[in-house]
Length: 428
Ligand SMILES: *Cc1c(COP(=O)(O)O)cnc(C)c1O
Image (cartoon, rainbow, N blue to C red):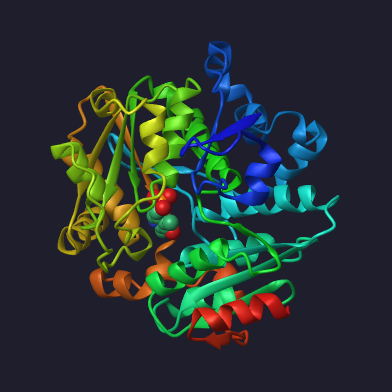
């Protein structure tokens, strides 16, 4: 499979090069040249397939013959070795729980898939690849965990000092081996800026790639669980509506790709917090990115969502066609807390702030009797312990995955300028 750059001035490239380079030389995001729908038979019989078989069917055309079939199956098995249940919380609403992986957020899926692809591709490379990533919280842990001990791959994670939760910090600073955490004296935007500078800096001697959802190997496997959810609910014979709590819009863009492959989804809702660039665009046709605003659903505090350009490409930049499949609404922190309370009071279900924003999306859309709404519960409530416990009358149990890292010792190198990052990259 070949990929083209959405800036259209770099040559098309292979899956391997798209993964290894992350972004095109012209700074555009990569997009697959062709998208071939899966057969109707497959969807009719989806109940007969295992999750692994489904994932293989979904991803194979995007990898092509660049990874042998048996190896790709092995990668898939390791990627999705946990559950993806749709938990019914109301007559016509379900929560698709994406937090049963090792770091308890959906990013485990993309991070595990990408790390194994990169490890496979770097086997025959002389040069080691360094994954450089800035995190506001969840990405760092998922990437650290997914890439731990990957051969030929080093990982450098930048995170803002004092701005991530204790659990998130432990998840990205305690693994050691090929993972290094750099604690930046600044905010997330400073980390992001340093990473961008490094990618543009010709004086950096290492081969760098990114592990954000701009990388096709992190973005595309996120299609899997939309199919797994469909498999669980299709026998209700209702029209399915997904509401995806969105920040960088990688997750929902994967859902729209799944629809393009033929997955029978009636509608998608991108639910955001007050970082409302996309909802505003749908409303008034002006795409006006803004600096991000801090909220209680902080993994979605993104003012300029990088994957929205891929969504526009999927709809050939036709706003009216996009609006038929896609709505987007924004919600305040106050509304998010009220939603957490409503869900808990009605269904005794504890949603994290991101899932609650997804739930609000379904409420606003106003499902009919012939529709079934699914919101993505993108992280376990324990990852946002403070907000959950101050909003709901509950005490969240610490799951074993989290218990394991809580008592480990944090190891991080403090940096406070780009020059220090550069010196680190060139010396190690
Ligand atoms: C990253 C993240 C999101 C946002 O996903 P995007 O693909 O960036 O839109 C939502 N919820 C949680 C918990 C996350 O970690």
